[in-house]
Length: 258
Length: 271
Image (cartoon, rainbow over all chains, first blue to last red; front, side, top):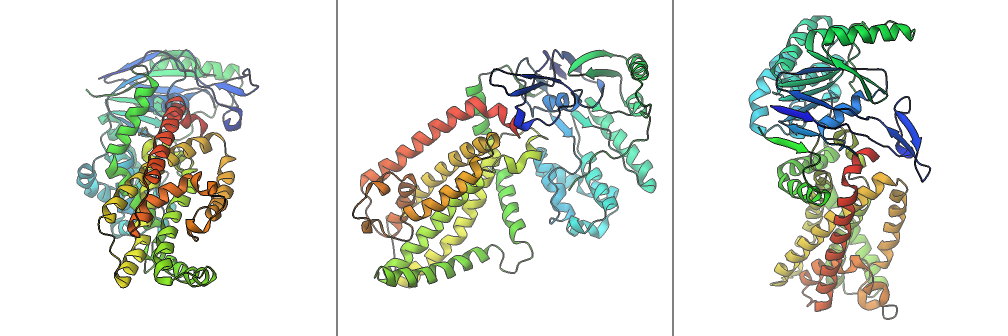
């Protein structure tokens, strides 16, 4: 599989919709609107087997890059070319509806991601077994506890086979009992993918999963290369900036919103 | 390996075409999601979406008696007119109001996964078409009761419905784009819709407007409503009504397509 991003993409947002002003390059255009160039001169090429980790401070452009690869944002300049089926996993609970049953939510989610009806019905037993929710799957998900919600979202998200998997933060659960099983499943899920791109602040995750790391800062590529090399330099840079060294926190669940 | 997308392999016009085409082809997706929206609205209620039918029936009955006596109409004449008019008006008003949200409502989805953007507009149109079908039941019952049979008018009205839906799609797309960019358009649309209700012949018959016929001839909604309502009530529509409806369809789609080509890829940025 050939997954190519030939040329970087710039992205400009109008003032009214500005939501990431902490970083990126902010400037004014002729009509005094604020523009943010979220990515500039990012040129990478990924191929079958590649596992790319994205690091960088807040607003460095990690999420924008992921969304550009996902085809959500079409680049304002430059080119992106993707071959293969993309499975984005930015938000575990995407498309969840509190009033629908667990089963229905799994089906809806699959429909959004372009997974066929037959495929998801085939995977249903596997998801049900993994979540250990049993009869609860027939109940509306608003009756679920936070932990149960997470099991459902996690189980549904990791059941499908992804060709190109995009993740914004590594998914994990905090439920101790469930942790090992979930970690194993998540690793298998990522392992099945032909290409993985994961943005994470957690070095242990990047070291375990990736064979390359891309370091972004203010929408520019600072360095791309082997995991150890980039991470070492990144950390040194962080110390120079006197940034708090809390990068190695255990993974926590980034996103679960209803 | 299948090529998912290449941002530079075709023009924006070709891309907009492809989006609309793929959107239309994903009928199983928006079909399911539209039904889901309806079910969600009426979950746990005994009558479900037939609440729509019931409340519309009550509305038609009460307005029918009040306005029928105000205007001195025969009820057997006025009630079917009102039932159809209100059902179609409800559809048009919902498309105008919900069309403003066709992209805003699905922001998290649009920012998460790539799919043809027209799917979202089609979902909005489809769910309102389901509501229209529920409201149409009132006319059907009334027609059976009063022994109305439109005959060939039924076929003509079918064409009218197709035209109405085709127009609903461009309205939902255009308003969706406009409201994604300019959030003020939504409240403006809301007040315009209220106004339109009074100047569109929903409750009153067009013949009553002896003077100021321009108010009717310049009202695009009148044509779209008339191509469905007229034939079903057994009227013979003048060709000008059909011509007007077709002209609106052509103009509306041309404008929407031009806007879609120009701004489709910006929509995700605006949300």
